[in-house]
Length: 313
Image (cartoon, rainbow, N blue to C red; front, top):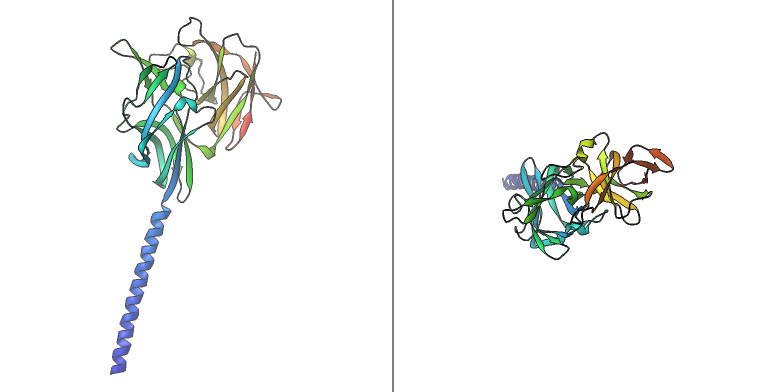
């Protein structure tokens, strides 16, 4: 009888141990599943260039970075002390690192910069004066930079928010007859590892005092109507993917270009009326030289640099 009781106790104990082991396994499995469902996102910001000669800096003060998935806003990184930086200082492939954090693995449609206060972000002029920078929903839902991207589980996704101030920043008259600047939500988010760059020199005789700007378009999307006088609150070359000011030595860089075929156009600007802005003079006729041959389009692949020299006619 005693042996039977001992055996029954052993059986019960074995069953309890089995249940405990299974429970532990399920718990570990759930934990692993939760870890596996998240990835890391690193966010940086970059810019093209502003046309206005009198603008010294465009300053943003960011307290949080969010990403949107299926209409739901998720925090990537938040800062006890806002990140303050001059976006104009990061051009030609240079970036400002904002922060990184965990996100649920999946597909996202945009990034949003939550700004710390309406007066914390501003435009500084060459003479040291400040102008208001109007940004819709700046401190609530945030400044939106659109672009689809995926965050994979157990990996890091490097994101670049290309704001391109040349298109994004426009002037807006205020009731006091003062002029303020408005930052439009027309930037783009790209996955850095899925981009390449186009760079080279612009060769040929340019007029004295002339500023040349290179614009990149997805193949077949350019329309000459974009060169007409823009409507209020818009800019010329609205459909361009990227742009770059030609440096004094003739060099230019179109950074963070997603894979695809592009056409490039060059426009001329100069200060003809001695005011604060450059005036559009027109598009310059050009040829594109790659490895000694002429091309109409430039094909970009990930992690590649295409040297395309632009010949002025």
